[in-house]
Length: 194
Ligand SMILES: [Zn+2]
Image 1 (cartoon, protein in one colour):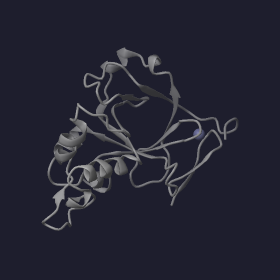
Image 2 (image 1 turned 180 degrees about the vertical axis):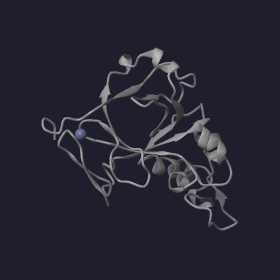
Image 3 (image 1 turned 30 degrees about the vertical axis):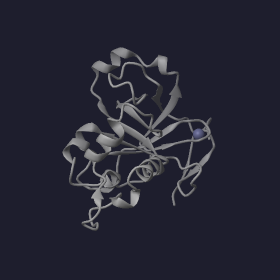
Image 4 (image 1 turned 135 degrees about the vertical axis):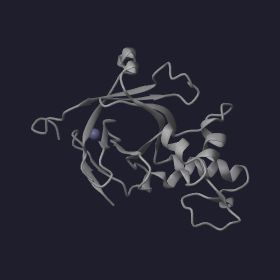
């Protein structure tokens, strides 16, 4: 279990089921590189895969980004801003496109699989699985969740990740035209905040 002080004064920890601050960003490019060889939920622990560990404060909605996967130090802080404040011309700047999901997404996935054929038919988090199980690979996730346009699946969003902005879009907004939520990078002043 890890703890982290948010600049708002809240203490975040990841051992709490109700308010788990852990979120993840996977670039599409990485999903496409591992369509069939890894479980979706093990991509973030695979050394050959690039993903981003992000914590979200449940009090103030700040995001804290851990750019170095081998360190537990926050490298960038982001404040929530009005989604309309995201400058559309930013889209010309280098950025990554992918999926952003929070800690509750795993349960969302299991519930949906249970309603269909059963989550126990799948290997959810690893390659060392019973051959009778199906690997919950990025390809399966694309088919069942990210490409499932006829239903709303909670706890994940389409996302753009910039050096100084994180922007989320509704799952139905494939063109990523209307920002739903946005965060802008800032430098905390710990003498005033916290
Ligand atoms: Zn906070």
